[in-house]
Length: 299
Ligand code: CP
Image (cartoon, rainbow, N blue to C red; front, side, top):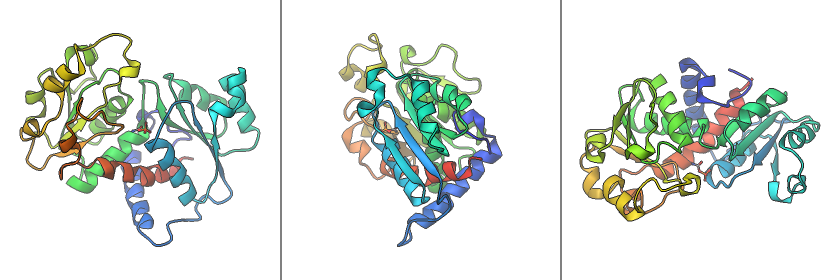
């Protein structure tokens, strides 16, 4: 395994499969009465979140505590960053405490990659701009493996704001590496002009999800859209939202996934988000075991 997990491309197919299997083993630990293992006792991790997060931040912290790490949650808003200290000086200051791992989320693409080159600590990308979110792709793969028995051969439709989605970017690479067939579904304005080789692009939602084994809805990232990419959110739901009527076009046992946070009524109907086919909260649960596996296995 590499020192860092900055991009899902950092790990081979075999390493990806090993991480998934290790996460599934950690799930067994998490079902025990005592959920903690002494694996990384004496090691220290700093969580450095420059952008809001609910799921990723809390699950990394829980994962770290379950591995017996000493955990520092760096609060950017009450740090010397607000006095103008640079990112690099901040990281060098933190590193001088002798830390072992740095988990970083940043609104700018490429920041974890930059930091990984500057520090001896192992860097884990917890989401950078519109670039990548590798641990999200891994937890999505774990969820698919648990529910479908494997990822190979699945037809996975990723729907919505592909252009601004780091989740889509990491998922496309991870799913294709594991042998799934990937469809990107959305309006032409929200799908990259040069989609990755091997994926199928659909500009019609009904065609895009027909017969799919997994329908992965993405959040419309209004905060990253500097201009209007569609006429209105009402219009978006009409053409690209996942309603119960539309879901019947997918395979009858199709999984409904969403990385969260959801915009109910914009990209996904509220009743679909909570329907029996939805595994959205299982994705959240799997985030702990996956992040344990990633931190445990980095060299
Ligand atoms: N899926 C995800 O990254 O959610 P958060 O922004 O809440 O961490």
